[in-house]
Amino acid sequence: MSPSDSLPDLTGHLVDEDRLQILHVLGAGSYGVVYKALDTTSPTPAYFAVKCLGMTTQYTTREVDLHSICSSHPSVSTLHRQFYSYGCLCIVLDLSACDLWAPIENGVFSDNNALVKQTFLQILDAVRFCHQRGVHHRDLKPENILCSADGGEVRITDFGLALDDELPCVAAAGTSPYMTPEALNLGRSTESYEPEQSDIWACCILLLNMMSGKFPWRKAIDSDYEWSTFLTDERYLRREFPISDKLNDLLERCFRPVASTRPTLLQLRMEIANMTHLFPPKETVVTMRLLSVPRPSPGTSAPSTPGASVASFSFNASDYASPATSNATSVSVELHPVRLSDVAGYKSHRKLAFVRPTIPAPSAPSAELSPAVLEMLARLRARPPPPAWPKARTVITPPPAPKEKSSRNPLKRLLRWFKRTRRDRA
Image (cartoon, rainbow, N blue to C red; front, side, top):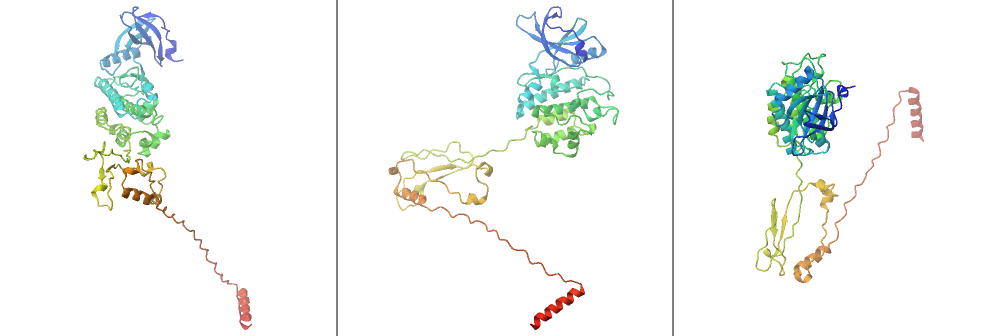
């Protein structure tokens, strides 16, 4: 039974000197229960989150004190006040739409560089604000980050495992996928760790959660297959997660096993802010189009090609000598590079060499085309199809006949000599 199971159920009660009415439970954790409450003193409907921490202990008092120190930052959940109800310590917090897992699971951050950068920088700024005041959260994860439905505004909450002790720490705390190797190996290969590094590490795992909804590993220990693969393969993150090469290089440094070689929180923030692409940049999709241009009226020039920004050229049959008078109009063509993989059926250069375009019948009446043009179109349509590509012949060369092996047996050699002698005499 978790400690939260022993807490009283406040649903439907009036608390905080009848200023708040508890409506229902929003969530329950290991050390408290969070309720949605209605402010009965507000002329307009106003709602808050009320967290019931249980009996007053040194841990609940430390959580309230450290949360109050960092509460003034806009990306930290505001702690308005505290009160006691049914012998339990409760705190009044801002109410948010959801935690960070909701937009992650809904795909709000998917392939959205601007939103991921905006939200992640808010988290980094809030964590840096806490560190400047000597507070280390030690349990950063999507469940402890409240946000709006669109993921654009975030607020860090739940300072139950936060510390302001002197560094380094000798007691590990947190959630396994977000903990550093030195914290997980505490007591085995390490004797202490820096909680500031734990927050930076957790922020990097958070970034991968936002971009993919996945974890890079279960635990950063040697027995974990994914962690071992990451240590031996520098392209592991780039292969498993939709991240750019620059972000891959940054996370490679942030996840180094030796804490002293990792970037600081400020360095991480600056590099993320200057990064153009967090997701891999999309390949430039280019097309090839033939634009038909309206025929100008007599005495006017041909109109300019709309949207021709790559390359264009024009051909006017009247500029060249012709055996017959031609009234063919000018045609402008816009050229765009095209990938052969986008062209169906073009699998080899041989097929490309024998592609014969279909010449449709003229849409305009024949009277509008000159005799020379009509003769040219008829000649093209009557042209015989190109010869078929000759099939490759398969030449099978029989293997050479095996040579007769000479025998070293003297009796057999003597017998062959008699046979040859008789054959020669005959």
